[in-house]
Image (cartoon, rainbow, N blue to C red):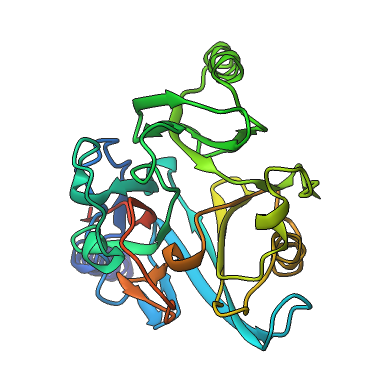
Length: 306
């Protein structure tokens, strides 16, 4: 009798356990995104926004912080913002172009460009369409242009999501870099020609050569993208205009304050091009804002429930 009762209890418990297993919600699946420029991030999770400054799902966590600061070169106090982003897969770090076309020479407003991207974090990139006769351009794995003057630094993001760079890049130097990466089993996914490289291997770089002398000393709006670790990144945005902002040396030093673990930091197009967006919305009021060529953005790779 006791044996039968025990078996009955075990059977009930097994049935209850199976019911709980099949009725409980599955974890969202994470899958790489296609490299295609016209394929965007997956829809963000409704409960992913913890606040207007923080988003998290199974594939990405991003959080923004801000502080006021009075740099030595600035006429007044400014607001500085920085976002830390951790992703699960390299394909979540993506780019887009104005009108999703290299041939279309028109620029676009950043907020309009962000529509439909499903981006968690987005920022402006370089000036790839301002000057078609300058730059080494690869976007989402597609090569577009090799027109280097030997005076600008090129940032490379590879298929593992790692940053590397070529200082004062020439076409021959980029060819050598491409050969080196191919031998190592890596490919160029996105490249940017603006710069300079602010931090390399954790060290602030010299920012005082002739080409950058005026740019380096100017207090203005700034934005930089950083690699902090494996699939971990940062974006630093500095408000400014009308004599306010940071010069490049101040920006590099500030990056080391907010991201002391920073491995590589690269200066993007600042001034009126400066744009930082969360959930497709600008988080600052850029003075003299202009239309731009493209965006760098971080997207979710969550497909839904298993």
